[in-house]
Image 1: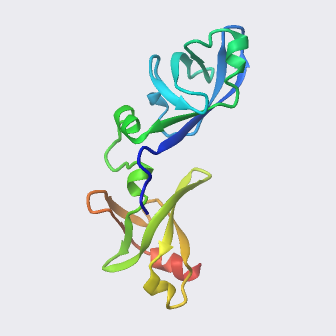
Image 2 (image 1 turned 90 degrees about the vertical axis):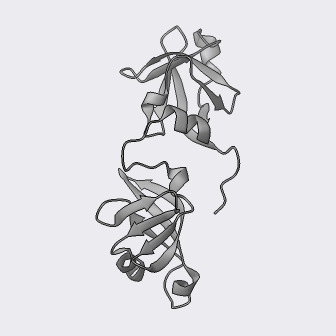
Length: 178
């Protein structure tokens, strides 16, 4: 699966106004809240927005040029986006962590057998699932065209971003039971 160039990732949505000074509720859709800092700018469906204040304890954010309640109301339901370069710059990863955009498109191998390709990642409750498009050879044997594998140590051995391979164990059992 080829990623679009300059793809933006949905990272937050702005909610209702809070107080009198243009504060807005911030609804995060990212694993990296630390990327939201005063002075950082993000693309939105209303143009570029620059953070002038953020309060994680209260779950609020304020943007430059929208410091009054009337101005801030215009941003209600606005979605914030970050691109791949901005995400990599502002979101440091720990050992063994991967950005979803680096995992999507990886082949999924169990031992020497190709099971398929990661075509999406879905979060259900607090677990990420690899949505895998099953390899044609396996589909031809009557197995499902798609299946989900929890991205947990029980099933995922490792992810090699350079080789674009996710090594799994017992995932074929999930495929066969699907």
